[in-house]
Image (cartoon, one colour):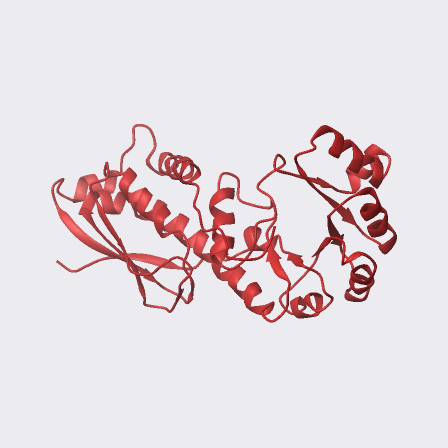
Length: 289
């Protein structure tokens, strides 16, 4: 994890998995929208607007577009008005979609569920990014994501100005308390991971300055400083901060973000970005005929 321009790439294979699973959940087998099929002529065409019902940061418009495409064999026209990462106000039009009315209404809830969720994550993340402005610290997410939506939620974190920690158990090794206990200590756990997976980045959770020094001496280049007070973090920064990247984690809040950033750590880890973000309310309104 380094600074610079964030990676805004959206994993479209993950998007398709999420979209088709959500549509299957909503439409059943065989897929159908009984209300729209009963009340709307098959050939009717309409235009609808996706409208923000509250202020926030937009993320997930390409995902919403994918939902409409999936329910119409690509025949709907989806035009983005806002851009990913834009701050929007209540009443702002985010996108305009035109197509068969049945299709629009069939796709509506799935498209909005994903768009509202992703925009909520981006909005929450932006609050943290703003709170850390002026410091070198950046806000990190965790693996505390909604099952099936990890790639989408972590993308939303990046849109909101945050940084992804790791995608799963496969791309970064994270030695935590239970690993240390099972392996016989920090150094033993670190060397076992390094021997088994030499190409994988290794991070070590520490709770004291003594553990921080031990992890660095073993070769660790990234430390998670778990549930430490700001004064303890400053001591860790003085002891090893010139040799490793440091992350503060555990019980952080927006009210204390600046205090933790001021210690000199590189990152603040916040599981709440993905497990506790409220949605950004977005509605779909058909234009009057």
